[in-house]
Image (cartoon, rainbow, N blue to C red):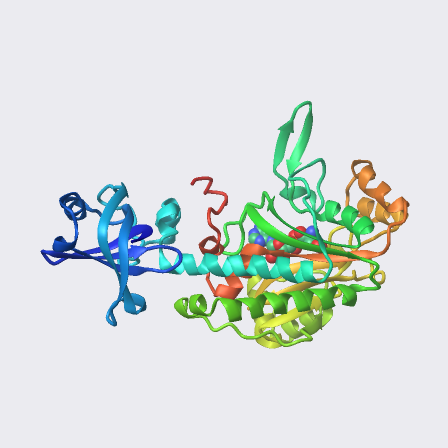
Length: 413
Ligand code: AMO
């Protein structure tokens, strides 16, 4: 006798036989309970069963062409592990459509929905693909802190945190720490949550995200970093295409292969292309979300926007000349999924740039000092895990691809 566990998605009672559809993340299956095959207790329990109850089934598999996967589980004994209350606040079978808000309010139930499961199985592959490519290419995984003393990406977006006698902040990026690791360990990466106190209410922004970061030392310029980025991105997309075919199909998504090299477009070319289309935009302006989409129509599904004005990039970005930084963004299906730069590894220049950005070098002393003792030139980038999941699964709202999203209104569950 074998044992299967799962949650009851459907119950079809035809008198002396009860058919069950059982949800399990491995795959749904049909179970069949016949009065003549089971003891009295099991039969009584089956008749009292409610949808979404957790059950343990003991029995065996038999072939049945009409059943899911061509087989069904013949139940000889059933144990109710936990009976679900009625009515259900959300029907995860998807038969009764629900608003995203309701799905998120009852996320634990929604995790039993096939589409939701497919999204997060794909997200698993994205994380695995990221980690495996980097490990296979000699990168070490690091663990930066989540509590920090000063900003790395601009002061306005920090969540303050009382920290004993001092003021601390939730990390908005592992930036300064991955740099300090790369100047000693050469090639490093990390995956960690970060927090941004942005007040937007947009389908592309959250206040807590997972960043997948890479940092490489002994580089010459931004192209050395971009070569790593594009191979890594291609590997992630290939992995999803090869190992999550079933999930992509279920979500009705055609995921195109990434052809290398990814097209490079300079910031200046992008501005000119938008101006030609009649957009009001000048050198020095950032692109709006709709302009990013327009750029995708012009330059394609995936492209790299590089040579950004210094004023639009953080203080640590290495200047290429007086105007632009060695900085880039990756635009995938019209959305920024990653950005990165070559970093300043000269303490004097770093101090100057910190001041030029209206920040106080005193708050960055430990960081600046890190570049006084054999700090090779380095650079890196960060993918937003949720943004990447969003463009790969072609979902419209970042909350769909975030298990428990944190935004201005949502702190629970
Ligand atoms: P940046 O601030 O551009 O760069 O962030 C990198 C990537 O993180 C994602 N992201 C977000 N996703 C959803 N909601 C948000 N509020 C949000 N903010 C950022 C995006 C973005 O491309 N330290 C640098 C990276 C580096 O230079 O290595 C940084 O954090 O996908």
